[in-house]
Image 1 (spheres, rainbow, N blue to C red):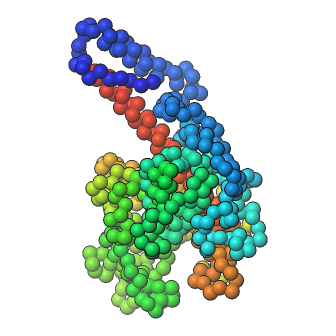
Image 2 (image 1 turned 45 degrees about the horizontal axis):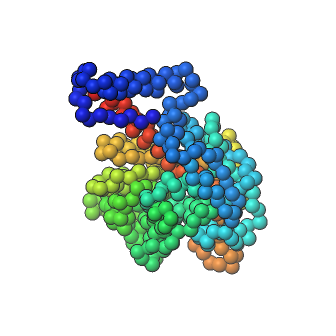
Image 3 (image 1 turned 90 degrees about the vertical axis):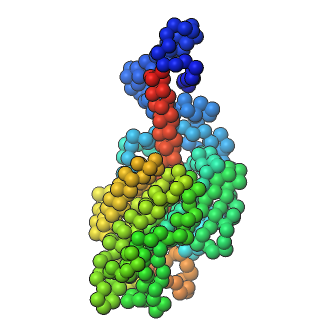
Length: 451
């Protein structure tokens, strides 16, 4: 129901216009209706009533899905009420999903070679056939038509490391059932790509910044572990992305694994310490110190943007699953099924990274709210802790190839469990639309009450 405010009626005017009196009566009756319907009919929630009214141009349709390579039903563009807005979608279990996957490495060209597990001979395929089931509700399988309708005329920036790029490639593959994007990149550098869905005027971009802040490789000989020693300027923005995202509608941040690597830390242009740099007279502050400061600077970079009005998502840490050794000491991930939630716990470095993220996010969220910005937590940690079976392992390259990460237990096979991150993202976009509808209605209610 829509209220039509009459700006010609000053506050307090009585009895001068019969139509005005009718309008007030209708308004009061409407308010009574809004407040009593949920009371007498608890199965009709206030939020769902708002949401379906807000989308009255579309008839609600059930979530539909198609198999790899099938045409997608255009009717699926209707956006139904989010069924999860009062449920923690990030807490749950993995359950079998025989309908998956919804694309293959043969139907999608966007899969990076290192995540193309089936191409390189992975013998099992069951890792693709699971679905995340939150406690207390159902998380719908990704609906590409709905997603593209929600992001019509908008833009999304993936800012961070290669795991974030892994998610972007998953999103391109999931959307390929409706449309493939065209390359509109400003540079030939593969670390900075832009894709546009012309039918929907939707742009997606990736900005490579593994530490999120300004940094450089400072040791060409590889440092103490022969994997590189980085100089990180923990209080300085990385201009490669911070000067490029002001006009984006959504920013999705992703970082963590690169902080395991040796690094020297600078603040206010002076050396303050390091993580495992093994340099004389330099204090080892640890990787969590660097990570916390980098997150703090990243959030400050976003809140300091003068014209940014978008929504910022922090994607939480996705644990790796190396067993029987570290990543550079023969560790591997050969499990073929997910854990149950009672079979493993978040602990050690995984817990520290996660808690550091959440603490810094909450502090930044308070600042952002004062400036009218929206920060959201895309909490993938528990779901991915339970998926030791979803990594490329040795199936991200040919056996004879000499590669840095021989057994990859950090990134995720495509198709694979990382596709669920985009299930999360779509549901969060739907919930955001629900919030906007509620805010609009409540705003109209307030205006009506003061007349």
